[in-house]
Length: 404
Image 1 (cartoon, rainbow, N blue to C red):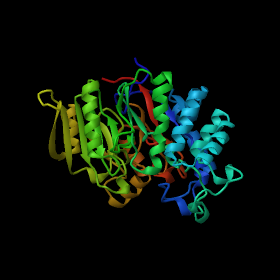
Image 2: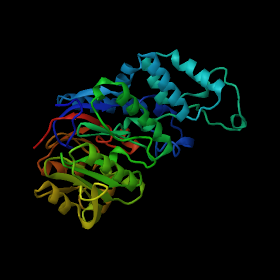
Image 3: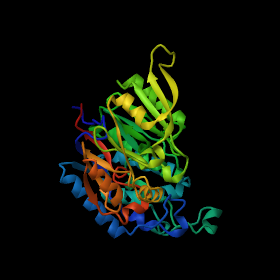
């Protein structure tokens, strides 16, 4: 088995990448919430306690946990790689003044690799670089406290890149304030030996955005992708083209989602929990626009696209070749469904077939899962859920056992 191996959503999880939220959450204030894509301010101490409980639930299932800061620190021991990272980080943080670039580089180089990573993620404050001179007119009139923005969304490690089979889709994020998050994936792909066998199926330098929350590995033949507000159709088509030419995948299914925050990604409304069981927001129970992209060498571009108006259940049955059970998030009551979906009731995370990790606050959804034979491991969620992401959002599977 190759180091990277993710051909399903439910195969036994062996290795996973996570990031425990840090000081970047302390840099959220009411004035900057919209810019930093948050609706509320989580309490860091409790959020970290909840994330540690989440990690412990993974360890109890025999999962090896890789911390983003730790694996990045391993490659930053080489000064030339660290220098390259700093230069790119400053470029993408719009630090253009040469004097300020020198100050930032000097400041970062004084930190240990672990401290360096924490600071890059937390955001460099103007008060960190002392004395801080005003270089431009905007420096005199702006009260914005950061030289580089914090990355508070990074504890949702699912989005910046995705393992598809043995390879990697490295993403261009939809929102500018999240685009730097995929720098870490770029450097891991380039320099870390764990990733050295992987092909890049999509690159962050592409024009069109795509995010990991929209990508679900159904099996070794089929990829399901959400056409959400954060994933562009041209990105899906390019990923499909590369997937067909570089791997053995034969089908990509693109499902059209409403362009609104409550349907931010496909995995906010739809996740797989067992071989033939899925949890779904009731809004997806009816007929949907689904675009089937099939590998077909009789076409010049190597694939064909078929538009269908079908139920998600029927479409999955066609490709999985088995009856499908869809479990409504929050039940079929619209009020409870919308409430629990907002709190990530549909964003559960399978650690093996029929065993999932879910937020404890979504009791109606969890009860329905149990009634359908699913084992639910509940984790505390009062603060983590304020970021609008659940257990699946907080994980980047690196290796799952293959299933038949």
